[in-house]
Image 1: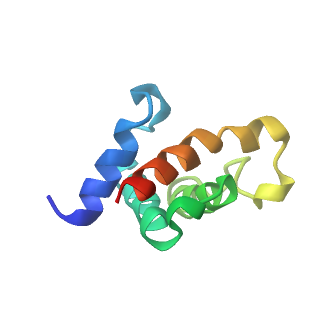
Image 2: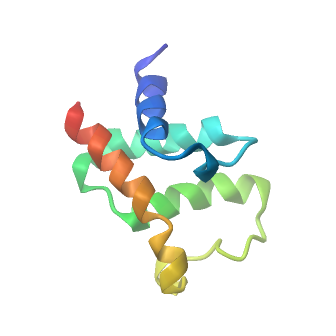
Amino acid sequence: MNYVDELAAAIRSRLPADRWPGEGADALTRLYALLALAKGAGVTAEDVHDAWAVWKAGSDPGHEALRPFGELDEATRRRDEPYAEAIRQVAAAR
């Protein structure tokens, strides 16, 4: 396993399985691994949303949450925080 996939697996392991989409989840976790590498422990929920948006734009360009983080309602913004926390944990452990 390469270092990117190791980071992706570590991030994924810190979240419940039901929080991951089925198809295409590997590509999404690799984007989260990129956040761990590029932003480290300073990653934010907005960063997570942007990575998710890049991923989602390829499969569902009309998705209702596919807009800037600041335009999302509070409940939707909060959904990104567990992913940001998992990325921060993995980045801090590197």
